[in-house]
Amino acid sequence: MNSIAFQPHESARFADAALKKSIGAMDRAQQCAVLWFGDIMRRRLYRELGYSSINQYARVELEFSKTRTGDFVQLARRLETLPEVRGAIASGDLGYTKAREIVKVASPENETGWVAAARESSRRELEKKVAVAKGRARRKASPDQVELIPSDHSVSTPPASVPVRLSVEMTPAQFARYEALLEKLHRKGPVGGRAEMILDALAHLVEAREKAPRGAFGGRPPYQIHVHQCPDCHQVTTPTSKGELAVEKEVAEAMKCDAEVARPGRRNTATIPPATRRLVLARDRHTCRTPGCGHTRFLEVHHLKPRAQGGNNHAENLVTLCSTCHRLWHEKPRSMAGMAGG
Image 1: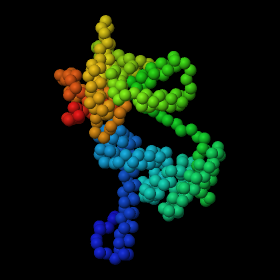
Image 2: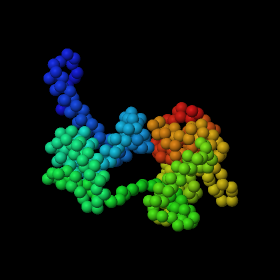
Image 3: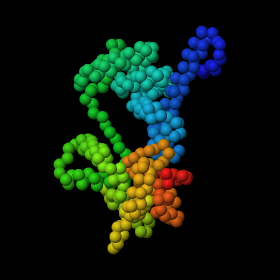
């Protein structure tokens, strides 16, 4: 379905038909956009394009607002758990507007019913059914599945008590840091379940950031784990409960930018003097300088010109990056002209 090019002074019936046809074409285009967006997000293709996150890619390359990016990310993630809904979108059987509506209440158990309800209902009717379903789900916190739409399609919600599973991927260096923090926490006394422990840690971090003056965090490098580099093969590893894990080359290179180095018989030295590090973080307003990123946590300082190539620790050769962007810069180097000094 293609839209009709705008032509002024047409009749009411022609204008009405042209508008409806254009809206249909727009809906189909949005369907394709969501599927392409989901593919780039699922396969992390944004990294091949030089971006550390799907959010950064969307803001820079697609010029999406924060709200629109969130809408696309949420819909793409929901479609990953709803294969029938996703298939209906891909085949053109289910429009973008209806799909965005039913993913609010659909689950793997009831998506067949919701797809059927979307096919048989107008957009306005579907919105009412979804509103009713959401209202009943809020009122009935029952361990049994509840029929939410009185139809033959058995559209229902999953049990209200089903927990949400959070899966986190870590690099070997991040996993070693996680274990070190966990061990330190256990030494200080009993801790609760893993979920509560993570929530408590986040709460304390938020409180500390709110109470501390800006710039209080930044004197020491971010890497507080032990890594070892073989003097012969130069392989970098880190000890964990799963044994010695190899650290990726780009992460090892990022560590060399901003870390404390221990050599036998010599004092530990920082690759960047603490005073210089604080100066660079303050200059960059404690914010990652990668275009489109703007993260203010897990910050590291990067050498624009590598020290191996004659780069120095002068502030004009240093820039603040978040850990994810820092790793990506070492993985896929690109021009950073004009990033420092602002």
